[in-house]
Image 1 (tube, helix red, strand yellow):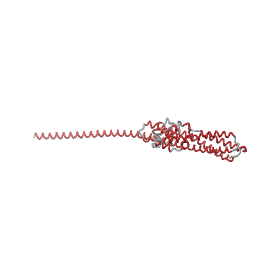
Image 2 (spheres, rainbow, N blue to C red):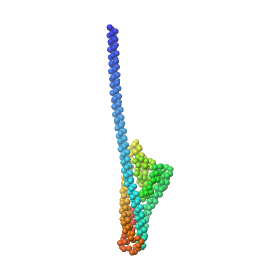
Image 3 (cartoon, one colour):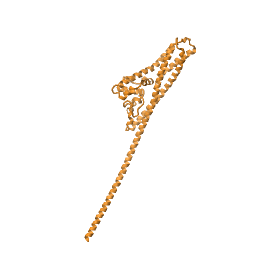
Image 4 (cartoon, one colour):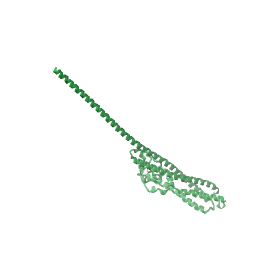
Length: 334
């Protein structure tokens, strides 16, 4: 009887221990699950916060990239408009040189024309020579730049940019901005220095946004602009052609680049307005002189002594008109 009781107590003890152990295990497992869930929730929160910060940084970088690309696009548009006006001005001036030659031939054909006409044509010739000499300077500098680009150190892209530069580009720049503003002549430099100087002087065209259209890492091209508007201050421009590839650049750097591009854009627009003013005056005077010249063709080869007062007046107006047009050859953009 005592043994049965002892056996029963043993079973009860074992069952109780088993139940307690089972409860402890469940509590431990439950606690572990809760702890794991808490850790997981906290980790998820940290991850979400990290992702939010990353997305915020990415958004800011992307926005700066967009702003920089937009600024470059505005610059390109402004440069293209200015370049087109510069070429048009060069063409109008070239036509004016031809017209002035026709007028001079007409006046020289008239016997006994006033001596003061000869003096006025000396002044006209001096002004015309300013334009022609600038054209020669542009051609020489472009030729020197091409020779330098073919040498060592110029860079493949830089050499190609100069090699394919049209002579018109060099001449419109030289005649519009003047040779005195070019600083050191390209022909006095060599290698990459000459090539970069040529690219800066010629303007080089539009700025490539993230591409490789600009001379191997040197955005001096285009951004420094014709006659090197701000070559010394345009230090940012060594990297701008690959800005789209450099997402990790500091915000400060990108903001500085954006501001510099904007300043160059405003400078281009200012010069564009100056070129437009000279162009409009040249077109107007050329058109007027063409009409005056046509009205005087009947005087070709005749004797001034036999002219009527009206004919003498027309011829005098023709010479004065020619002198006014020729004076525009010396007007340049500052």
